[in-house]
Length: 92
Image (cartoon, rainbow, N blue to C red; front, side):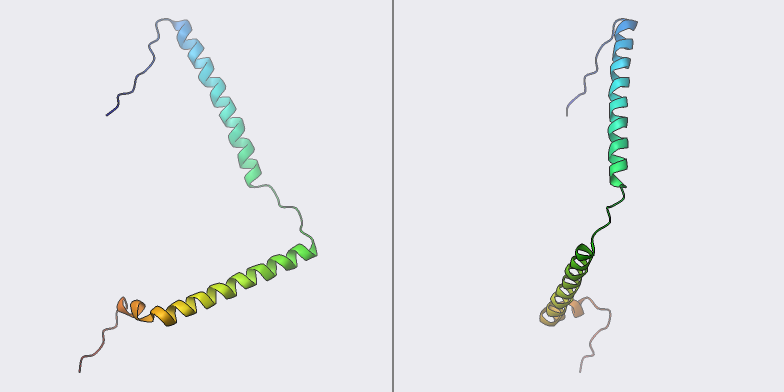
């Protein structure tokens, strides 16, 4: 287990210097966070009609592909999913 070592300050001047360094670092971090926050919620530029149609087609193909994949998996491995169901088979 590692022990953390902390700096030893002998004078008030050293403490003030370290305080100023930390204050500057916090200020830079605050500016960076503010910039990143504003970039996160920046309004998207209006897309052209062709970009809109392209995105609708791509999303539609993705939905259809996902549906077909799930259908195939259920058909192939349907027995696995019924194993976890709450209904119990009747024994004859």
